[in-house]
Length: 248
Image 1 (tube, rainbow, N blue to C red):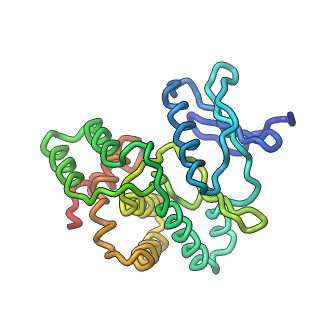
Image 2 (image 1 turned 90 degrees about the horizontal axis):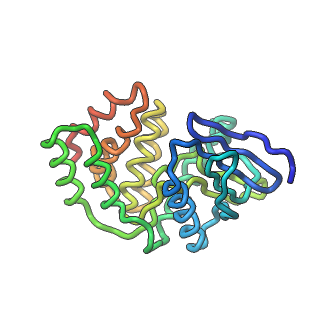
């Protein structure tokens, strides 16, 4: 085994490279069930045939749970966008094509998106009237069984030197309506202040799928409510405005 070195870290996770392995180490705020569920999600998505890093093992390192998977050599799509802003249109079209490829698959054993969202709405600190309205909105949405990534953004797409694309981080994967997944992607761009990219992304996604922008935007209050559980400083007011919106 080669010497491990950190390639990414956040408050509760560190990601290392060790030779041809990628090791994601979680701190003690994560339960065993959290880690096993993430690994199970990724294993189930592997079975669809999509290009994703393959799970090698779930283990413990220094008393913390860790997931070991293939290390994928390359650059994230976000890195390429930052380095080549003149190619943004090309990259956005590729980004949407990858998302559409994901949505063309099914994984029947994954959690139902609507069930997950209902649970998350119940966990918010909104008053009973607002939670009822969000549950009602969610129930009115079309029910599908498409594979949904749950956090699809350019930092989770690796482009290899050969030009292949691999999608990372399947911890939030569900089966449901891909328009909800697109609404979360739209929201992520907005939260990062990338409004022009956000709007162009929506145009490309809706055009290539033959749907109206309203079909995606109708999900925004719901995905914003689930995003509010992350309690990221500075996002609360922005998300609350979306939760209270009427995109019908």
